[in-house]
Length: 102
Image (cartoon, rainbow, N blue to C red; front, side):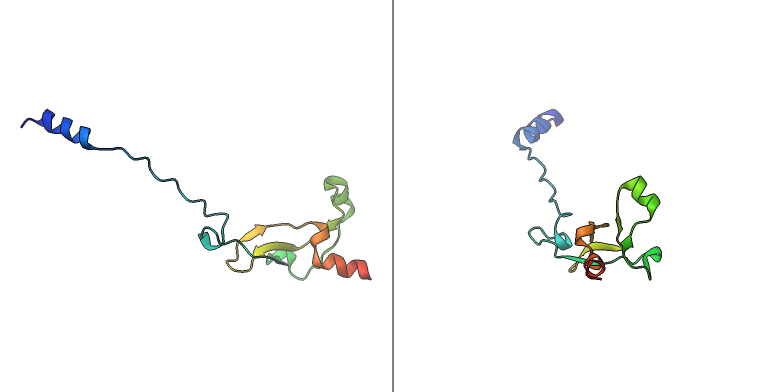
C-alpha cells in the first residue's frame, strides 16, 4: 500500500464534528448552570469606606455627577461571594431609610 492511498482512505472515513460551545458559566452561582445568584446588600470592605456612614453627597459631587446621595454599600451573592454590583442606587441603600426617618 502506498502512502497516498492510506491517506485518502483515512480522510474519506473521518467525519468532522463541530466543537461543542462553551457553557456560559459567569452568570450563574459557582459556575454551575441553572444555579442563580442570591443577592444581598452589604457594606464595602475598602479602606476609604471603613467607619463612614452613607450620607448626602458634597456640593462638588452633586454638580459634577448629579447624585445627591453617596452610598458605601454593594450587592454581592450570599452563596459564592461574587460582587454583582459595585454601587447601588439611592433608593436601595439601607441607610437611606434610617436618615429619612430622622
